[in-house]
Image 1 (tube, each protein chain N blue to C red):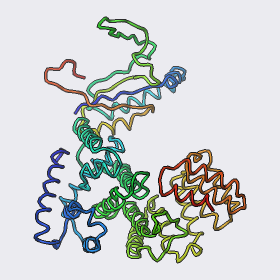
Image 2 (image 1 turned 30 degrees about the vertical axis):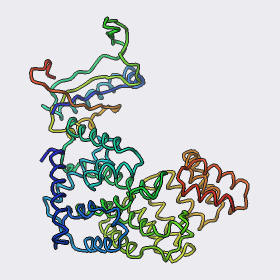
Image 3 (image 1 turned 180 degrees about the horizontal axis):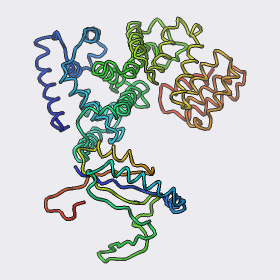
Image 4 (image 1 turned 90 degrees about the horizontal axis):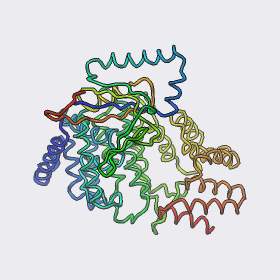
Length: 374
Length: 121
């Protein structure tokens, strides 16, 4: 099958069929990938926080789901085509959410705080490019696989962050894209069970989601990792992520997602902020830097370094990233914390004010304002 | 499907090429020839172009053709050559583009094939 439109039509048909059958027959013994999608299309928004729904999903995830080979391949073809590098990033995101995760254009529009017409047009244009430019509807060949898989993982992680970090807009009305992305990553793990980075990405998402209930206080204010009530962390999710990471590690192909997940796991498994294994965290950041030398990773490493070598060392490491990160609010927010620790109050204040000017996210702004008020 | 691979050159790249010692330039040509050999029968047409100083533009100004010196776009990159390839799909065309030996950028675009259309390749 080489036709994306036809393939998508078939997917939609399968979905409709499954939607009609599930309520009558319940969860089948061997729930395939279609059923996951079906579950999602049946008003997941309301059901998402419903305990029974979660239990059902858990059941599905726990069961040794063996995907039909042909069905699995078809799913993979769809994912790789939606995430083809010849499509723009925003087209990849919209198309993946529409065609693979089964969201409606209205849901995608709400998630990205844009109009339904914009998303619809984006999807139509992307489909037209797939057809007109001859983007093949197939799983990439071995020579291209590593690069193409990176592209898919980047799309999923961006989707996750869009939901998890929610850069502005009214949070209450937004769709939880982080859960959608984790679902997609879970699907990819099923389809490509021996790709270490896919396992790593799912572990990373689960570790972040495990902390979700502790990230905001009762007034809806953002709570920093060090001040979070660790009893609110979802231990089952942390355990499932740790198991994924072990599976990934056994494959002996380390990568940036596995390392980021390992760092998140280090935090998740520490009984308290003070008891965090900072040596391990710094070592993991070093490994991550060796693979992806980015200034943001250097900034994060400096924060871990703070707890090992003190604020003075950390501050000089943070300031070394200034040329690249001067426009990044977390650079200034981190600098402010370190300056405060060193008793340089006025400079800390100034840095906080810089940070405040650089973020639009209401939760982050509120947090910075509280810091300023101290 | 047929695609046009458009090989672009920057002014700097062009100067570098012009000032290249003869042996180095023939080594570069050898790599380009290798690329064409590997592409084989998939290349159904194409040419290297003379540099942009040789370009002359005909612009229709209110329907009237006006001839001017220079390329049609004041761009940082100009087309230095092109190849028409006949391949299975975009991935195969991109595979050829990625193997292009001299660097720069390569734009890949499907051509429109119509029955009775003029000028193949």
